[in-house]
Image 1 (cartoon, rainbow, N blue to C red):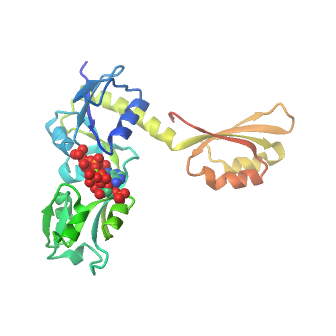
Image 2: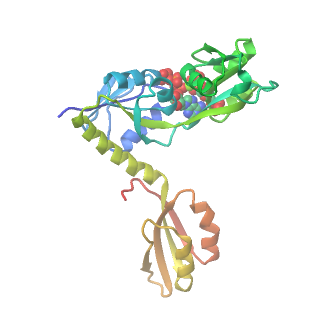
Image 3: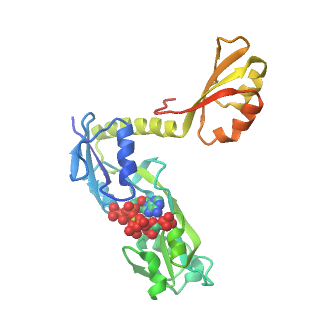
Length: 285
Ligand SMILES: Nc1ncnc2c1ncn2[C@@H]1O[C@H](COP(=O)(O)OP(=O)(O)OP(=O)(O)O)[C@@H](O)[C@H]1O
Ligand SMILES: O=P(O)(O)OC[C@H]1O[C@H](OP(=O)(O)OP(=O)(O)O)[C@H](O)[C@@H]1O
Ligand SMILES: [Mg+2]
């Protein structure tokens, strides 16, 4: 049986979370970082450590079958490459920014002006869509400095917290796209390897659902049980078990991790006690 060849970023912002998700789905790799590729111990997978920016070409050529990559890089260099799963990390925007005191308020206002970027194809696509003519300067890093050294009137780059823009005296005027890490697939993947990828995708989905959920246990007085159950959305419906102490029940359920803080006060106000919130490793629905 052949191995699925999956690319991850060798070093950089995606590396750690990519390796963690592989580990969480049971794919452990020995001694990864110093090697260009490494076979997994317990699954028919080989991991290739590559530059994020080089991965779209490897996918196109079928040198790797799948990859964990920033969606923004696929849009820039591999618009024909599909992805099968959003992975929930490395969330960022690709935005247009200009000096704080500039009058420009949108990409349109940069017509006839100079834009510095590491994402020329992305900017070209948006310029074309909006029928704008502007001059592009491709630079590979420290894009935010370009307006300050007189190289450009505006930039297009990745924005996350916005602190790099702030430090360089720039303001965001238009968000071109939002991005996160995705599981991308080579158009040349074989049927046999696609079957391995499907298994990986299923495992990833179980891990991501688990990450987004919490297991909640609490004690409820029986006379308030109905009100408490109404506050709890469950996978199917909450489990209710009698406690040794008469008149009390133990309630178990799974809720979205963001929902918990919204209902905690109401749970307490309705008499819930001994509330435990536990992480879920994997969740299969
Ligand atoms: N500040 C950020 N916050 C969140 N995600 C980001 C941020 N900067 C970049 N990313 C995401 O992480 C990806 C990798 O970024 P990183 O800076 O590590 O690599 P790179 O220099 O673009 O790529 P390469 O591996 O080719 O050197 C980006 O393509 C983007 O999807
Ligand atoms: O909005 P922020 O939270 O400040 O993040 C945005 C910055 O992060 C990325 O750079 P990175 O730190 O990866 O450095 P690099 O340019 O060397 O890749 C990106 O290129 C921006 O410069
Ligand atoms: Mg970077």
